Structures are given as structure tokens and as C-alpha cells.
Image 1 (cartoon, one colour):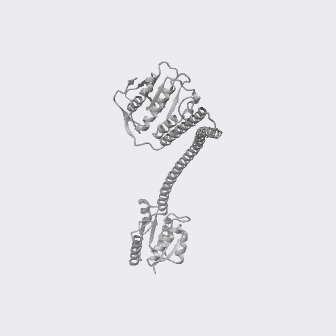
Image 2 (cartoon, rainbow, N blue to C red):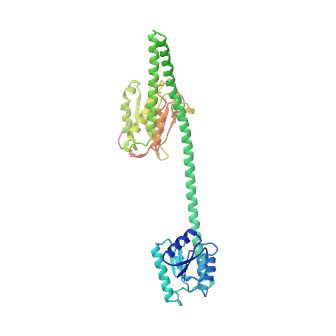
Image 3 (cartoon, rainbow, N blue to C red):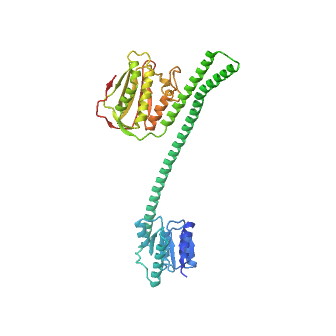
Length: 422
């Protein structure tokens, strides 16, 4: 039975190759490196050797050089079977050392067996001749030079591969750290949100519970104070309205945090005019002028959500107009660093600088006596952020008005005059 010596330092590779060869009727012996292979072949010469190249102790190239220099082994055919040395120059060097085949792994079993049979058949026909013309090895220094060149090229590729892997791991690590920070931030926000919501919802519930208990007590005691009972019922009704308003705004906030609808190209001036027309009555009642800058850019946004943003910002400007004798709201755009930044500006009450960040928090109201739940600006920020933008407020303090600035994805300019003074 034909005996084949296989050499590889990875047991799975040895097992797979041995299984293929034994399945086709060959006797198989194995070694884990070049030195081991020479020792095995010295005791029991095989009919064929198949070896990997990259191995410890002695690699495949050095094994081939010593194999072909040995008087007892040099006529035994030699096959390289490698997955690491696959460059054309590697193949050329392998043949210059005297190898009969240079096969890149993995190969389909039928192709590998065909190559083995061809080499064995050629060897049996010409035991005293090399199967392929063996290129002269030259002197020892030339062989070493070529060998070092091959090793250096492989080392260089390996270093580049390792550098790429290290860079990839560093990128993955940074991404992981970013995700962790974002999750920690989201968890903190969720904790604050849960506390704030539970606190705000509890207040009207306490009112409802308290006055309903008073009604129950007074009725059970036979009270005839109809006016008092009606007053209690009115307070319960007011608390219910407050609760409904809170839940409605929370639902809006939840929807604002979801993915926006399909973006569409629309002039920002068109959206501004829509909101101005919608608020025509309160604007007239308060004698508030609205100035919309001409030629506002075309934006790529969810039309409905962006209208909600402007509606919230303009309602805030109306609500906090103060005692300004000539109230005005300006809507426009500035260029900052080459990018357009939209703004909604009023000359109303203004905000103290220390509160400019807080006003975007959930249920944050600087004046508890004003109508609303304090969710509006949180909704505005959520919508802007879902669009990939950011929003911030600017004010020089009480009596100096407020400017809300925000960024949006822009695709061009309208090219038409959108200016409108009311």
C-alpha cells in the first residue's frame, strides 16, 4: 500500500488530510514539523510527502531543502500544501527547491487526490529522474537569500495584517465604549423620566382621591351643602383635565422619539407660513408681528413633525411675550461654519442664562402659573434630534427676549421670496 507522510502543526488539518487520503486507500503517517518529518522518513521512508509551510522548529521550505539534499530521500516526491504562502514568488521558490507540486489549501478532495495520483504515477515511471525539471539551487548563500526574502515578505504581510486587526479591535473597543456610555446615559434618563412622570401624575391623582373622599364623607353624613359638593366635583374635574393633558403630552413625546415619517423636500418658509396662518387668531389678539426671512433653505424633513416644532416654539413666544409694547417673532437662518442654522427669535420676557439648558427637560416650567405641562420643548428637542439635528436656546436674561437655534438636513434653497410681515 502506498505510504504518504503528511506534515502539519495543526491537528485538525492533519486529521482532515489523513481522512481524505485513507478514504482513498492510502497508508498515512504524520509529523508535526519539518524536523519531525525528517526523523520519521529516516526510519520509514514514504512514497510521497505532503507538507504545510508555516510550522515551528522547521518550516516547509527548510524541510524541502534538506529533503532534496538527502541521497535517500531526494527522489521521493514532495508536495507543498499551504494556506499561508500563496504568493507567486512563494510558489517559484518552492519549485526552485525541488518540489513537485505547490497546492493552495483548501482544495476539493477529488482535486487533491487527482494531484496526488498524478505525482505518484509520474514518480513510478521515472524513479531516477525528477518529475519536473528542478531549477538549480545555486550556492548555499543564494538559497538562503531567497529563503530570507520569502520569510521577510511573509512577515511583512503578517505585520500589516496584525496592524489591521489591532486597528479594527481598537475601533470595535471605542464603539463598545460609546455604546456603553450611551446606554448608561439612557438608563439615567429613563430613571429621571420615570421619577418625573410618577411625580407629575401622582399630583392630580392625589387631588382626585382627596376630593372624592370628601364628597363621599359629606354625602354619608347627609350634607346639604350643594355648593361645596359642586366645588369638590369641579376640583376633581380640573385634576382629571390636568391628568389627561399630561398623558396626551407624554404620548406626543413618545411618538416624537420614534422614527420620523418619510422625509420630504419642502421649503422651510412654507412650513413657517403654515404655522403662522394656524396661529393667526392669537397673533392678532396680542398684536404680535411675525417676520419670516426670504429664501429660506429647502429641508428634507417629516413635514408634520417639523410643523409641530415651529408650532411649539411660536406658541412659547406668544405665551412669554411679557409686557413688550411691540412684540415680534422672527424666523430665519444664519450660516455658522458653512452650515445653515435656523432660528425662532422673540423680544419677549427672556430667560436667565442658568436655565437655558433646563427648559428642554421634561415637565420643566420656569413659571408654574403659566398654562401647559412643560413637555413642549422636550418634544421639540426629540423631533430635532430624530432628524439628526440639535437645538439650543440663547438669551441675555430677563427682558431681552429668547432665540431658539436648531440645525436640520438641508438640500437647497427655495429660490422664492418667503418674506412675510404680519
